[in-house]
Amino acid sequence: MNYENQKPFVARGSNIERCEACLLPQRGCICDYRVSVEARARFWLLTHRYETLKPTNTGRLITDTIEGSDLFRWSRTEPDTRFLQALDDPAIDPYIVFPEGEDYQHRMVEFEHKPGRQPVFIILDGTWRQARRMFRHGRYLDRLPVIQPSTTRTSRYMLRKAQHDHHLCTAEVAVAMLEQIGDQASADVLEAYFDIFNQHYRASRLSRPIESDTGAKNLLRVTQGNKASVSA
Image (cartoon, rainbow, N blue to C red; front, side, top):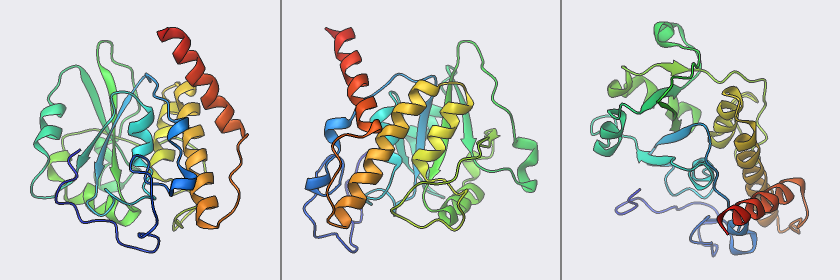
């Protein structure tokens, strides 16, 4: 993703010294826990321009963790040409992840594995209000099937207040979709990374101690060790 000519992040906390990679405050950097896994699906994030450089955005956790995932900038009138070209790849099986609605009921599908094609879940990365507008006004998305996360999860995201508990953040949507296609191992890794992000950011914001020994951190340490053993 090219960040040139992007509006810089300007909000409360924008003057804090941050890690250039994870964008968290330096004392809460989570880069040591980053590990990528080859999941049964990839994720493409169509990201609203206001989300791109927000430190609280969780979309980057997906691209950090799930191999082959990518981020594209959403535009109503000038769709990302790289995104459109990627959609034409016959080796992928793309879906837009969005809740069911009467206006597009005919596009709603259940996931079905297609031999020789890799699932790609396209997530509209923004606030719920932004995502609804992106879905409604992105005419170039109309040809794609829509899949709804089948989950009873409630959001554990602590850095922004959702309008409803069932409104999951971007990373939580990806976790739910991995569980939905039976890839629990990859879902666990992404969820662990999300939990660490949540914990570190909140602790940094409130000037609280950061726990060094948690279930999420232990899982990612084991995953990192297993990957290192395989590559050795």
